Image (spheres, rainbow, N blue to C red):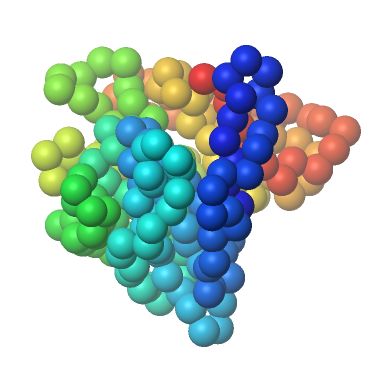
Length: 232
């Protein structure tokens, strides 16, 4: 795992002390919690299907592995929820695709399964993309989670995240019809969700006030969409 310090004046990168950090598995996804305390790495291989947690040294950026979880089908996509209290992983099982959810110990990154985990995505196989956001309304918070799979109509499943426990509840109308996607991204304002397809296009839909999705629109581009990112 390579880590870089960012020059705040121009964005230039310089390797941080200790980088690269050894990692014995085969990583396929990486994510940082919104508080900048932990790095999550999902692996998917014949020998290691793990979600590993690294504590981030806030002064140097150095990584220290503190926890690990294993699931059937590995972790093809990983995302913390928008509050930083929970982290979720989507597996690559053919039948069924499942989401595993964990509460994050804020002191050391230890993971504890949330109630009901793992969650089966109805009529879905081969989980691909996973993204979380926060709805503009709600008190104290209204985090939601969206998961993309690739079979059975390519559904995009949506869930509310219980702020107190991390448990997931399917949104009304979920799963939503989307094209085949490699990644999914919910914007940080809780207004839009995008899914990059395996062809030269991506889907976009509005997020309603309760997390449900509006009608899907398709945008054509002259390149393969392998990843999506949004600025701050």
